Image (cartoon, rainbow, N blue to C red; front, top):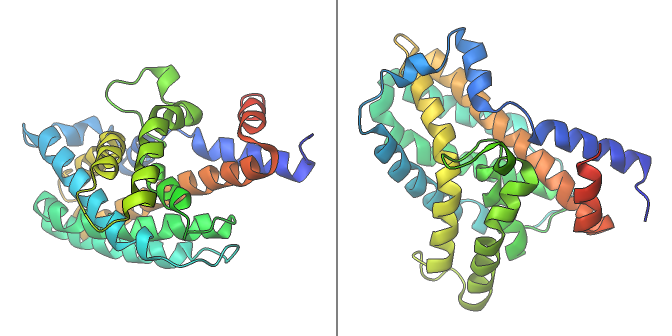
Length: 259
């Protein structure tokens, strides 16, 4: 089945969004100085701490946000409202500094996940379906490499392939046993894998907020960039999934690589 011209343009748009430079480049551009300067100001054990915070934030967001949303496929996403909410939490985090991240990150992540699910619905996803819920969580793994990645491992379809087995097992577990146990092992393993990638971008956000005198206004702007990045990832991801439902996964992936 040949691609319709409108769908081909949508796929090009999705690829532009999904293969962008990432949040670090956007923050560096905002600060006017390399983000590495901020990393020098973080505590020595920061990598361990941010990994723990990210995993906890994702786990709380999953149970508080996407698994409580209702279906309304095709409804327009409320991107602006979610940006304002995340900017507000970023302003608070910027005012109180890194010590506030443990409080701010779970709130921001939950709001972002609601926004991601909102975008999913606008692209025709039925959020009541387990597959769609998990696809929302996947977005946090997009647009940023893990520590073990090389260039060939960080592309959109490479990331989805790396998560595929964990996604399948989590979906099967939830379908069979539901979410009665917050410690559902298959879901926890998926969250850990996604957190490995998400934590890189959280570290970049934290490094930016560690820059002296960033303050509440800077924290709000950084958080706006943060959610804007994941809204872009979500839109690209769910455009691709919409086209996969129409043309099939293999056809869409092959066309994606040529547009």
